[in-house]
Image 1 (cartoon, rainbow, N blue to C red):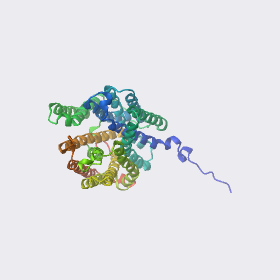
Image 2: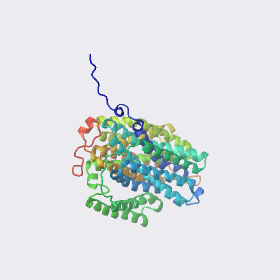
Image 3: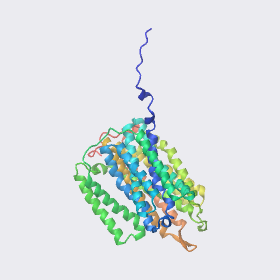
Image 4: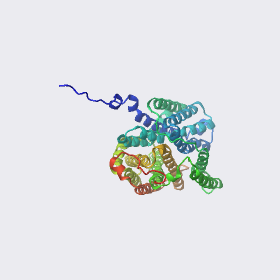
Length: 491
């Protein structure tokens, strides 16, 4: 009996090459690095005035500069990725992040340190660029879980960065911390250069320089007002001028974007319900998520004499945050399965509800360490569900040539939410204090009010999620593919 030859698939289809298998882990590593870079400076802040000879207000710019640069560069680099190649722009963002670490390691001059931290802000674009690469490169059935993991890296990196930095600062020279992050950045850059292929999906056109300058000016005015309002007074002339400037500039920018043939941000698409509502949900989710990190770290370090504080060291505080990162890693595939079976808007709504539940636990008891850890873990679970669903909603609603810029705007909304959360939490804690040993410390009532506020905002995020139009066909298939009418007209 003659043997009929059986056609075989190409070797690449049967056994993916090592580079292709490592694409997801390499991109996830880049996302973790981005979050680590944002948090490593936190343990240093109390000592930086002494180490650099600068004032506390100048030192605070070590955080503000990264925030502002990230907010401005995320949508800009996202648009550049759609136009010129996502891999190319991803490598540029990682290179700027690494260069910022090297500069920080080489100097004690506060001016250079602030500029270097601004360079590190470019890393904020890593996550939206990576999500867009995953959509372009992966088959539909793998996209959901990969995007969920990529979204979770924000929390994973934040949870890892604090204990890592605290250990290095406690047992070594503070410059060593930046040398360590520079080494990690160089590793991430080399791995991305080797493992990530350039996406063939492009949206060529002329780069909107005027739109970029307008967005940058408006965001700087807005976020400076939010971040500096607590220090200078919300009713001060400078803060009010910043907010007024933000309103005027962003209004003019919106007018220019609507008239531009190739806008930096497609506002007609962005304000549609299928894209605009996920952006609003991202704003509220970012607010709710960030309150947990801010309040938990301060609460467990509060002196025992307060009656509620645990008096933990910076290293112990960082280790308390570590379980949250592990939970985000473990729950990212759960989020992908819920989105595949029920749809990402349901996942987002459930995430908002779980966030609120976590804060309810914190309101009931915030004096026992195990309850604090449980409450923080529940908040992290809700954050994982919400953050993993947001990019999936965006991917289903925008054309393939606009995924990086659209996800960049979504990450920008999270950043604004976190900035507002920081200002709101600070305002509450400052207005609810007691004297202890000649110093003002926050009261337990102030912390509980912050938890109530964050939980209420999380419920608002859940309500917004339920208002997002469903894409029943995509939800049944679990492909994550965008709806065919996801255009500026049909959004």
